[in-house]
Image 1 (spheres, rainbow, N blue to C red):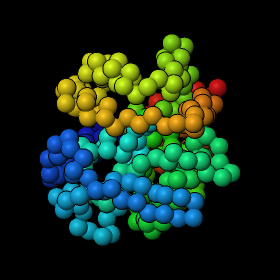
Image 2: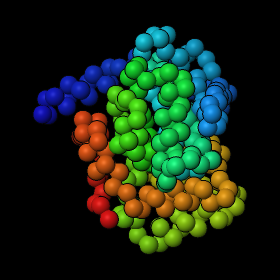
Image 3: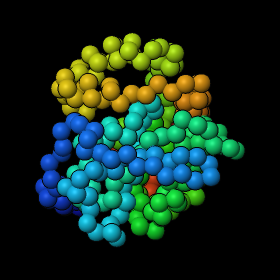
Length: 256
């Protein structure tokens, strides 16, 4: 097992060494892309330069799903992966989908995007961060579109691991003005060590991506996270995909 993991790590390191360096934190490296279907607008960011564009039209597709209230531009540093796969940085919807509840609104949006751009059948990999990971697991559990795999980064699977103070602050953040959130979130982000140190300009860029939706729509979606055993659902519906995600170190939170 250790030998196999070592070989895999070596292969990944070699592949990453062939990628171009990450661009500066500037949204001009991205191009806004939008499509429309009968249910509404579908939005994403794609590389604006050939330096981060895969020349192979048969390459797999990497679709990145941001966290709650975040914008697809937060994946700017992942643009070099666009040399190995066709990369799409999604903007999550601010409108509901008929007949859906909770994360189903977001999962339907991802499914519509994949179908509209005819990405199914090319080996779609969903990369989800925080709530984006929860959405990716929901898409896998629904089995409405064919996926090749999941990459889960700091995935939010269940909020029972949060203490009451954190849960209260999370809810409060939806009623505070954006400037006040940034005022307190900036120092906290610069001090975090979970993903490495953030420089001042990096923290400012990340906070510039924050969007505060109106009408409480995303609050209802966040509430849905409290009741779902997303990893368990994905295991039952797409066991091979969920199992691969678990082997990569995703914590399975208890059902509640």
